[in-house]
Image 1 (cartoon, rainbow, N blue to C red):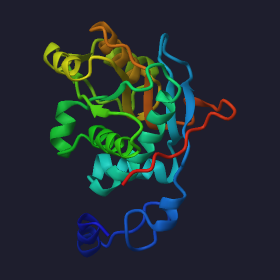
Image 2 (image 1 turned 120 degrees about the vertical axis):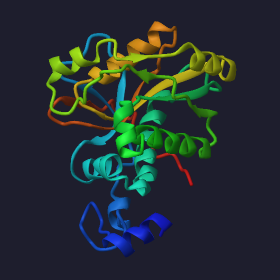
Image 3 (image 1 turned 90 degrees about the horizontal axis):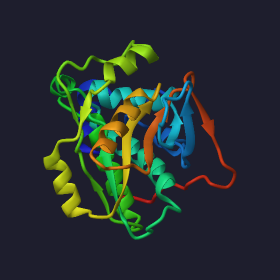
Length: 249
């Protein structure tokens, strides 16, 4: 049990987000039932030019509870299993790509600054950092996290917006400042860049982030997510191409 779990048990009477049994936020049985493969998926309708998208799970049940638990309730212990799920998606994206020895650079989709201040946490960045550690532990490639994207002032919360409103809200919403880009180029002159997010819904956020990176000459291999909504996306399972879970610590 982690110190955070012990504190939650003492102060809040913690219970499993999956089955409700008293104890840890995720009991051993529910943890063992988490996905061990990732799959390709697309939003419907799909934004024009959206890169390849991979998710580890549908956004429902215990996965949804975990994402919300980390983002809204600051259940920090959940960054580990969620990051491990994100690592599955990254692994599927980069396997079989050109330059097998190239570094992998994970770029988290940024949250609004006001949201980060209010929550005291950037949950997507936390998941991405954990995913990088998990992938490094697999010793397959050099993996780094580069939070090079920034949000513009005035960006609204996406919750409750339909696909058209999301696209309008996000138009020009993300930028890639030159300073961060220069640091990235010096550290990783040849790298496979993967955009990372928690949940794929309409694809509008991912497409805007992809545009901002492409605008500064930084193409991406694809978009890795923890989960994809089931009402707005459909899964694609090429036979025999499911990735196995990276073995981390």
